Image 1 (cartoon, rainbow, N blue to C red):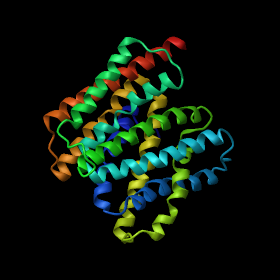
Image 2 (cartoon, rainbow, N blue to C red):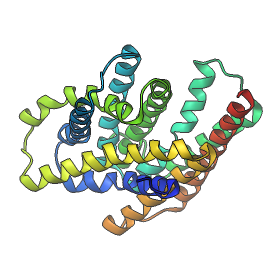
Image 3 (cartoon, rainbow, N blue to C red):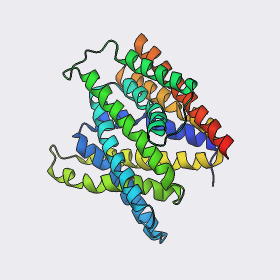
Amino acid sequence: MKFNPYLEVLLAATIGGSSGIFIRYLDLPVTTITFFRLFIPALILFIYLKWKKVKLFRRNIKLMLLGSSLNAARLFLFIMAYMYTSIANGVIILFTWPIFAAIFSILILKEKVNWKTLGLILLAFVGIIMMYINKEFSFTNKDFVGMTLMLVSAICLAFVIIIFKEVLKENDNIETVFYQNIVGAVVFIPFIFINFPKPTIPQIGLGAGYGILCGMVTFILFFSALKRLKVAVYSLLCYWEVVAGIFFGFLFFKEIITWNMFVGGACIILSSLLIRKNAEKKQCKVT
């Protein structure tokens, strides 16, 4: 049974926007939470793929391991960021990743760039500056630290998406989600034994729920919808995650949106949307 692809994206984006809630309520060391986020989906998908008798690690192994390692690093930074800054700050900064993906495509892939794209990249950085404008530039400032961690996480995410875009060409959706998580799942296993405090039964249940929903269900829904929607429509709907994250931050933690967050977020989201739209137009012309 297939669901409406529009609803799949909106549901996935809503679940993605809830990450900060899980992280705050788990109230565990960052490495423990990262373990749940990576290990649970990797374990479930490993069992499923073995049941389906899928031969794993059969192609693009080096590229897949690099992408999975970067994904583990960016999730560690992502989770830590939400421990320092608000959910609204975090989710807005996270969606700078399309800007960094555009920059990397210019610097690494040597793609040609026009003045419009350069202007949009500049607009995005103006948005980032606006987000930081009322923050003390000090590592003693929690918001500054959290937003900076999320910014680095977004840079890593841009690399991860570029890498797994290649992996997806030769692997199906479920395999790709498994590969995304596998390196981090192994790396963070020791922390579940050495970290204190140890998770309680309710925390284990919540951590497992976080891994299943945000680490597995979200991506399966995203990939399923991507196959049936135009990329332009898909990209636009993905930004519902920003709205959902801001709403959850207000609903659960009474977070307030300041004027600079609104202006900076608008600059970042607008530039990200237009950059992705331009990239999709170029792909259409090539094909």
